[in-house]
Amino acid sequence: MARPKQNEPRIDDQADAPERAIRPRALERGDTIEPMGESPALRLQNRLADAYGVREGKWSPRRTLMFIILVCGGFWLLLFAGLRAFLR
Image (cartoon, rainbow, N blue to C red; front, side, top):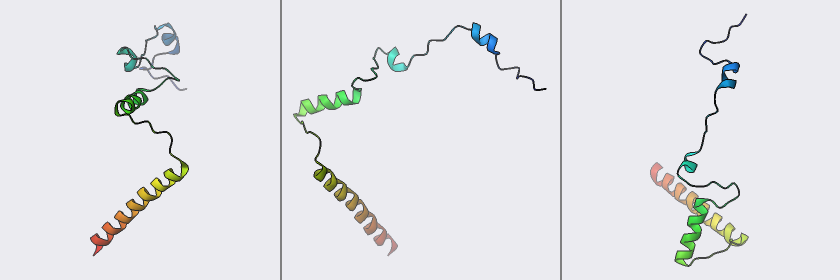
């Protein structure tokens, strides 16, 4: 017959124990967490955009594709050139 460990509190003991209030550190500092609200990072981005006068909308699909091709193509070209120079 299996015996329970001596260290573990029994279920009866846990039912009588008072609940601990567990709060995230952000709430202890006075910040609020809103589930559907704006995050602090987005607020900072908006403030910086206002300060520098930059307001760009979403990129077009063509511009996004060109960015991906240039960045990824540049990475692979540099990697190939570096390996080629290293292996000579």
